[in-house]
Length: 68
Image (cartoon, rainbow, N blue to C red):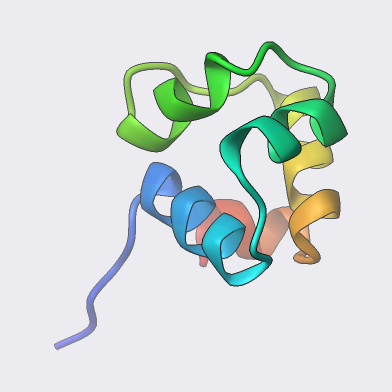
C-alpha cells in the first residue's frame, strides 16, 4: 500500500528538509508570513502562481509538489 501525502503535508516536509522557517519560506515566495502555516495546515490552498514559487524555493518541480 502506498502512502500519499497531501499538498499541505508535502509543503511542510519539504520546507523542513530545506531547513527553512515558515517566515523564510514566506519571504522567499513573497507572501505574508501567516500564509505558510495556513498552507501547511490545509486551511488555505495556495494559488497556482504561489505553488510555482513554493516548488522553486523548495527545489522540486511543480509536478512533484502537486502530484507527488
